[in-house]
Length: 236
Ligand code: ADP
Ligand code: MG
Image (cartoon, rainbow, N blue to C red; front, top):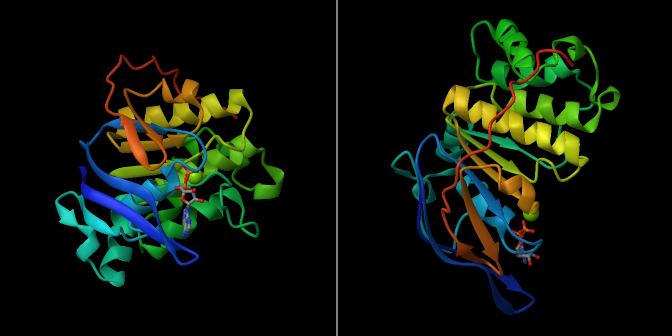
């Protein structure tokens, strides 16, 4: 469960304070799939970074499964991120000198997981890229790189997956495929998924949408019937 209470963010812009996130309350129950949509500069990445504990709010509390992360020190925060949160970025951020399999292996080995290699193979299968295991990021399409990045983010079975514009660098067919994979992860694993996008059409696919504008949430939790998900292919 993700809960924000009176969370805001003000930064200094020159010598003037600039509020980039106005005080906000938000409750995302476990297992929900939420999209956050809004134009560039509306505060989406700021909000996601706060939920991930990558940045500290100016005011308010952020509770992840009941733990107020704004009160944690760096080590405890890093531990919480490693165990509870997977993060997917617009530009994939794969390690270029490692192949797809090794990229997925990294977080498993850091966590000292037993059976890391089998687990990495299972994750490759989950995103349908078993036959790309030995390809380096430069040998993969953007959509494939993002699928590997999703597999890596899922390595330690985080209960929460945060994705910041994961389709922003992809054409619309690949973008849809990535969102379908995220929805599939949400349904099969019960992972809480927060998807940031400026693509209102993609945001329509999730069960709940939060709209942001100028650092404020304009519309919240508009429940709708989720679109059917096509199964993730095990083929490339
Ligand atoms: P989005 O992800 O919706 O495009 P961001 O959360 O990245 O928006 O940014 C929201 C606004 O805050 C933007 O106007 C951005 O320029 C500004 N901003 C973000 N971080 C900082 C910072 N550290 N200092 C000053 N301004 C910032
Ligand atoms: Mg952003």
